[in-house]
Length: 449
Ligand SMILES: NC(=O)c1ccc[n+]([C@@H]2O[C@H](COP(=O)([O-])OP(=O)(O)OC[C@H]3O[C@@H](n4cnc5c(N)ncnc54)[C@H](O)[C@@H]3O)[C@@H](O)[C@H]2O)c1
Image 1 (cartoon, rainbow, N blue to C red):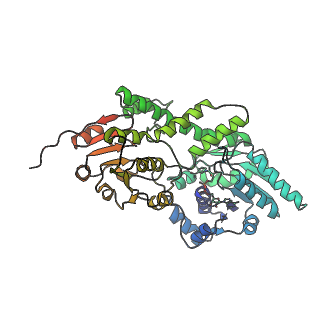
Image 2 (image 1 turned 180 degrees about the vertical axis):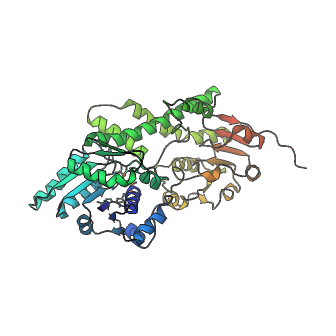
Image 3 (image 1 turned 45 degrees about the vertical axis):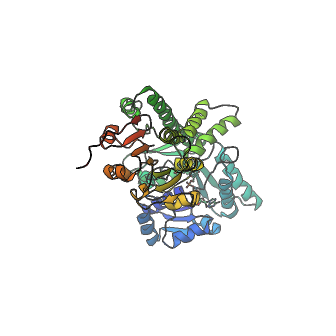
């Protein structure tokens, strides 16, 4: 199939590459010439496991190409997949200007039937706006060309995006048009050889499904975070509670981790946008208002803990911080809790040296030279009063604790991701303060002979 991807960001690049991998002829459009130049020169603008190899293989085979030419892009694909950004507008609603601009471009340049696929996360009613924009442009030039618009929200997770696209749990398609539904079946047939994963529904339900999924996941996180803070006050351990409730199949273990708050390019903006949609229709989503409030507070939880050990005035204190990306296996820094935590530490007079396996370059764009960047976890500890853990990268799971104890001025780990066993930390002579587990004091170490 001939496919055009409009918007070559996380979703567009991954989707386009995976669609090329199964044999399609894919042309990716972006208006950012730097991004397209990078891709045409063999570079990959984002970090995503497995993506480099796939992009290079399909580009070399001629199945995956990149352009800034709107005319060329519209002419290429019978399927025009819109994967542009939908950032929050000033009032929290989704800014649809990129989506509508993409739709107008299609209407302006199409000369044959197009199936327009909304892959961006968009509020209910957007497919109607896309349809209207294309129809308007066609009318302006007196053209009478058929087209269909379907909703096909994307559920891939950054950090596992290629795997998620190649082996999806489900593919949601919102379509009111039989020709379009058939084409969508054909498009996704290679990704569901094991069993049918396409869930076809009306367009509005599909649009709402994406927001509902992200709102549900954010709710689980904020619920666990709120419970974690209670557990700490009560002297319970949230990690044991997590196991206790996760074992119930109605609850399940996924997305049940307490931590220092959710971030990223999706949950924060989608939770806000869904509330905004409700408000526009005279409704209030009370649960989601609380989810947001809890999350904003939870990003400061590590600061509470730092103050517990070092007091409010952090002038002259220096902290090591492990993990900058909003989650492991990505370099995405959008709404990352690390940004809030670092800003609060700096505001209180402390200095910070951070280590992240991948996200340092992205972090620099946000933080500049306000902090130091280390090139290994251990190098970050140099001269630090304590260690803060913000992102649960695998490389942090089993570090050399003896060395950590020796390097830190005071052997304290403040863990925003609950990576370690408090009993082992105590044995190792490290005071351990984690989310929903309280403080475990270090045991006195035998003097070395
Ligand atoms: N990132 C994720 O994990 C994820 C997951 C599922 C859904 N989504 C949704 O997918 C959409 C895209 O997200 P993303 O993270 O890939 O965004 P992104 O910011 O990484 O990429 C968007 C790209 O679109 C380009 N663009 C903007 N207007 C354009 C136009 N008119 N024509 C061509 N290109 C244009 C931008 O230059 C940019 O490169 C959003 O709606 C997002 O909510 C994202």
